[in-house]
Length: 114
Image 1 (cartoon, helix red, strand yellow):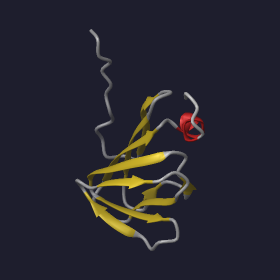
Image 2 (cartoon, rainbow, N blue to C red):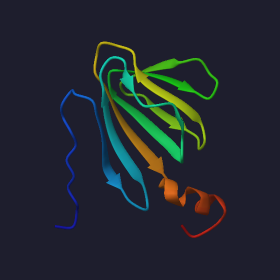
Image 3 (cartoon, rainbow, N blue to C red):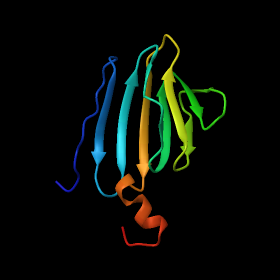
Image 4 (cartoon, helix red, strand yellow):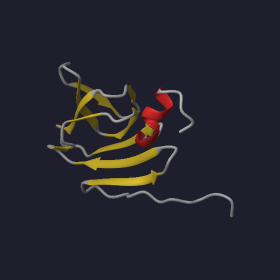
């Protein structure tokens, strides 16, 4: 078998799982219920965030919170302040891709091989 098969969580309870975490990319799967989310932080790479189900409430930089429904893909630049929350009754499910992998971000920006 050439491919690697990975399974993701399919429940409704809070979960932040590292599906792929290697030198190329970080691929995370997140599930949040009402009033759950991530601590405010700064993106450590380019972040591509897909809303799979529910409604994402997110504050970026100094902007007011915006809401995005299922089927939306956000492209968030490196070092952007992020406040990720679910403020709705429906379960929020996200796929988050960080590319390049954060440990290689600075190297690539400086023209290195990593």
